[in-house]
Amino acid sequence: MERAWKPAALNEAPRSPVTSRGPTRLRMNKRPVSASELEQGYESDKQKSAGMKVVRAKDELRSALEPRRGGHIGLVPTMGAFHDGHLALLRAAREDCDTVVCSLFVNPSQFGQGEDLERYPRNEARDLELARAKGVDFLFAPSPEEMYPRGFETWVEPERLALELEGVIRPTHFRGVATICLKLFNIVRPNTAYFGAKDAQQLAVIERLVRDLDLELEIRVVETVRDDDGLALSSRNAYLSPTERRIALALPRALALGAEAARDGDDPVVVARAALDEEPGLKTQYVASADYAGPRLLAAVQVGKTRLIDNILLKGTSK
Ligand code: AMP
Image 1 (tube, helix red, strand yellow):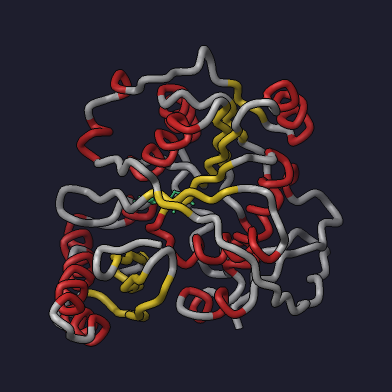
Image 2 (cartoon, rainbow, N blue to C red; image 1 turned 30 degrees about the horizontal axis):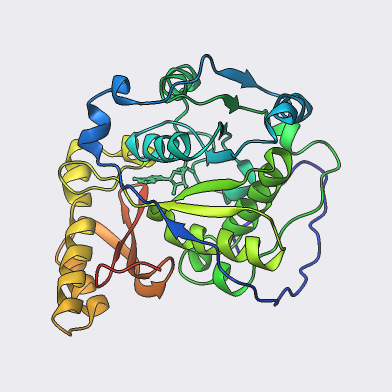
């Protein structure tokens, strides 16, 4: 079993069953933003903040947000290495909210051992400029010690949803995601938090967390932003060589074929898997359909050393 990162000398909290249900408050981004629209540049942004403050400490962020509590606060959690997908979330938040907080934290606890924590792309200076240009008010970029101080030992342990698909391959991943998101929600206390449909299972886990733990916030979903060739934008695309990138295109192609098959009444999973099997350069980890913010066809593949996930809405519907 894969071992998760954890702060030194800490014990894991025991698993506890949490099974309550509640109403969903998930809604889709009312105005999808295309990559080309984003490429038009920052000047197209209607609202800009007077200046962005970079905050490293939780207490400092809490104090800075205090006078803003009367207005609508939006949170965009990220691990940085910004691309147009991240910028679409920031744009949605800027359109909705009086105050936009973007967190930039490569969360060690969501990486398993042997995963890419050390080499995960980081470019804080560039991210800072992009966030500033998108009108972010507060960029929260804490250190690992700030988020996981010595003695940290309490974890959020999502169950069923977190154990399928990604959870089979990355058994401790969603525990890290759910824990850091709950911490960020408690520090920022946003009215709305923004997540990408690119990570559809993560979105479902977070939505479940919000319902099960009675959190008072709304989740807004921004659909996947893709490159012109169809590849979903991801910070990890930076790992791909030109040849691997060509191979990786089989992933969105297979999903599109699967979605088309579903419209014709065929099994999208069978069709997408067959399409992936035709590309010898990649290894398919899973192809599945699930209801994560609408019915979706999802797949994960390995191209060289790079793991890629993607999904597509089936029947063009959303919740
Ligand atoms: P990350 O920095 O990879 O943890 O992603 C931060 C947020 O951006 C998550 O909510 C992701 O789902 C979202 N995101 C990542 N890639 C994309 C994309 N291509 N389109 C839309 N959202 C994305």
